[in-house]
Length: 131
Image (tube, rainbow, N blue to C red; front, side, top):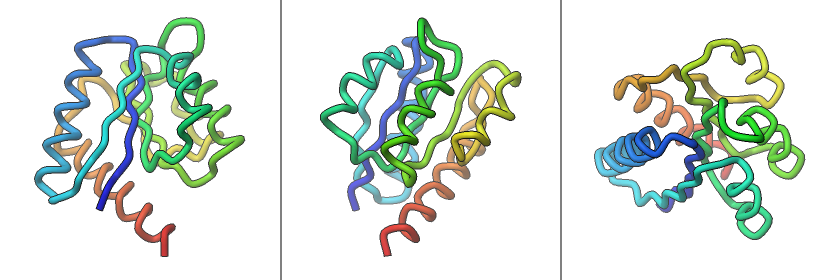
């Protein structure tokens, strides 16, 4: 199974940590995962115009000019099925995550076990949606 993912975070260390954790999770589950990494919402949306087949998006909320919630709202106009997980250091936006049907909201620093649990749920939902 190929699982297409994108991580969008303006903090390079967090981007690397999430990418590494996602790779570990995939290896533990025997899944082939593709991880596209983006340092801003704008860079993701530029790419998204061409590639709209992601299974999972891990999005930071507080970024540069465009925040992750605004980005998720734009994505939802085109794709109702992609799983969105917000990962941030701020709890102020939890309610807004419901507006875009986010799967989960994780606080930084990300706990490996919590992330793996959320990723398992996202994978299960994706499998159910593809039947």
